[in-house]
Image (cartoon, one colour):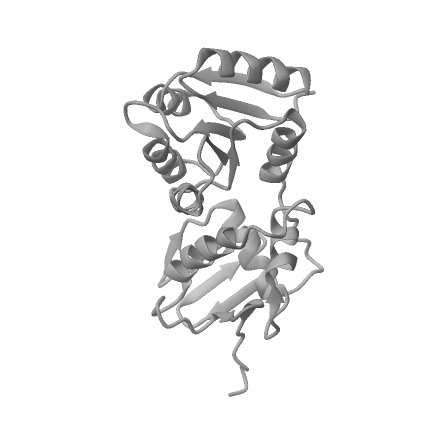
Length: 233
């Protein structure tokens, strides 16, 4: 039984060959592409659970391919790059990636990142409210939908999982490490820039004024707090 379908996108044939062999041996179905354009063509005709996407490719490049793929799909996306700067990480996450890994990387690290990206935080019926109304914003946790002003707004799976965790623990400061481990997995904890990007994206989608948030509040040096107004007020 396949663990999932992965699309490997890299202009280096040796990297594509090694990753195909490694991931197939671990139980994944693997296809590959030599460019962002070729990857987008494959995404139009096939469904994948995850894409491993090189950030520094000629042509359209990894970032533009990531933006276009994210606009059309909820699959997990991991960006690969030879640079390890905060700016690169923020650019990758802002383009729609779920995670970021620096070359060269070990096979165990790659497999751990893939498992984390494919991980979905369950929204069990017994845990917290299944619907939440905030002004003109309605969150349906069971169907994983966000309705703003009567129109559905797309959330990536990681955005939804982060919002779900915040709303399950309203009105308390949740540390960065707790949020990272709850949404990405136990191997995470120091990737604070991930939270900054994803919180910024959530604020754009649910806050009336994203630059003056009413619901997702920053707790300086600690983490974030979801302010749930008292319905009796």
